[in-house]
Amino acid sequence: MAGRRGQAASVVVAVVFAARLPAAAQPSPVPDEYDIEQLGKVLTNPIAPIPNIPFEATWNEGVGVNDDLQFQLKIEPVIPFSLADRWNLVMRSVLPFTSQPPAASGDSTEFGFDQWQLSLFLSPVPGASTHLLWGIGPILGLPTSSLSSLQGGTWQAGPTGVVRYELGPWTATLLVNQLWSFADTGDVEQDQVSQLFVQPIISYTRGSWTIIAESETTINWEASDDKWSLPLELYASKLTRFGATHLKVTAGGGWFPLTSSGGAEWRVRLAFALVFPPKR
Image (cartoon, rainbow, N blue to C red; front, side, top):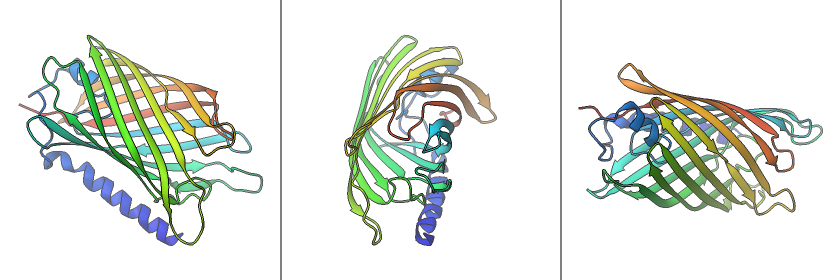
C-alpha cells in the first residue's frame, strides 16, 4: 500500500510539472489570438491545440451496495506540441482522486487515487477553413490506484482516437478508446480488464457560452452482465478572462438509463479549466 501511495505521489508531481509546460513546451501552431467565441468552440475539443488544465468535480449518486454518493475529482491537463508544420502531438492526461462507497456488505468507504490514464494523439494541424479534425494514438493505464475496490492494479494499454466536425456554431466530436490489461502489479492477481470508452459530444457556442450534450459511455467486456454504463448528460459552460489567462466554468449533470452493477443512477458535475491561449 505504501508503494502505491508513493506511486500516486509521483504522479501528482508529474502532473503538476506537466501543467507548467505551456510556457516552455512550444505549443502547436494556432492563430495569434482567438476571440472568445472561437476559443469556446476550440475548447470543446478533447485534443484542443491550446494548453489547458481542467479540474472536474463529479458527484455520482446510487453507487455501491448501499446506493451511496461517490465523489471524484479529475485533473486533466492537455499539452500540445508541434512536431512539424503539418502535425501536432497532443498529450492528454487524466488523474482521478475518488471517494469510493462500499462495493459489498462489510466494506468501508475508500479515499485515494484511481488509475492514471495518459493518451497521446497525432493530429494534423488544422487550416483556417478546416471543418474536419482527427487524431489517433495510444492510451496507457498506469497502476497508480490506491483503491482496492477498483480495477487500478494492472498495467493497461490500447488505441485511442478522436474525430471532430465543426459547422458554424455547432461542433460534433467522438472520442473513443479501448483498454486491455497486460500485467499485474505485486503478488496479488488482478481481474483482467477489457473496457471500451465512447464519448460523443454535441456542442453549440454563442459568444462566451457553450451548451454541451454528451455521453461518457463505458462497456466492460469482461463482465458477465450489466456490461454497459451509459449516461445522458447536459452541461453549460462560460468562458471569461482570468488575469493573464482564461477561465472556463462548466456545470450540469446527467442520468444513467443503463448502468453497471453498483454503478451510478445520476450525476452532478462542476468543472473549472485554466486556459492558456496564445498572445500577440
